Image 1 (tube, rainbow, N blue to C red):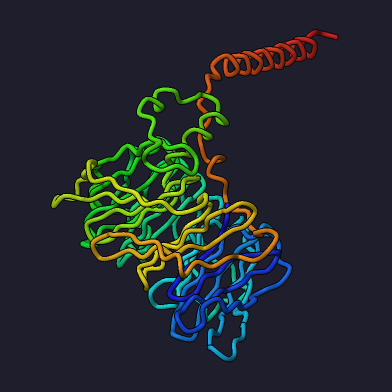
Image 2: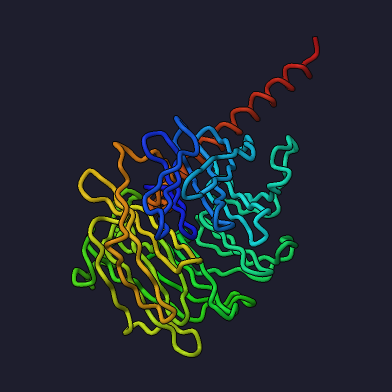
Length: 396
């Protein structure tokens, strides 16, 4: 999968071992700024434009190193300042720079979330997690006084922020990992997408499920016309077969714009929209799609410009395609603003969604076999102990 970030007029990605920022503003379209050369494989990459001339880029790599850099994006001169680096205990899976442009939240593969200050990022002091899950944390979102964290086990945790030890609710019901979450404009409901092929709407305070949409299954790189209504009954039980099937209706990104949910499916070539009614219930009959050339391998939403950026594979190359999203949720592909990522390879190792599916095999026989072996081992050890005691108790 492709790891990249999008914010304002800045896109960040990793091409041919180099972390780069591509400026896509109207006046300097296509300007490329190299942040770091010859990096290890990137596991997470995030960028945020914090001023008209400055972009913050944060990325973690397979060596478990976290790097923060500030990039000047002037039309004439540009430069890169490395704020600092940190050695993390686990690989970084999610990053978010909060509205104060100084507080950085970082999630790792063990399910913990850490909080750093950019002003003190060069410090060697080791941070303690502010909250955590018992499985891989797949996505997180901080909105106002709420922090949403979601994991491989299909659980969304709603915590107060910054007092993350105060849990508002848990949203429970997904059968597979959570791939993306967002909050409705009024802050009362959560929308989540999952590897189980559903979109679900939850009441934020109570965690109760209010609505759901079973996403139609599509063939790779095909639109709604390729829906197979009966395919859901043929899910395989092995992890490999099941993940190959279910990835086809796994939302890669879910974004709420007004009264519309905008989402893209893994390995498809379409952007989908579906409407809410006045009570935040999904209206299934309103599902629509628009096609984008290529096969989706990564996506990000730039809220500042209301643009959905899609990284599409076309043949042996990759193209970043902007899709503008109106306040009413209408999507338009802006072909004239596409950007070709020139390079022989994209240097990233994002968590593979296929690896997040749970094994669904009957291991009862294996369990009882191991249990029998443990019991036999305990009996054997107990008999040896008894024999030893008898030998010691015999008169000499």
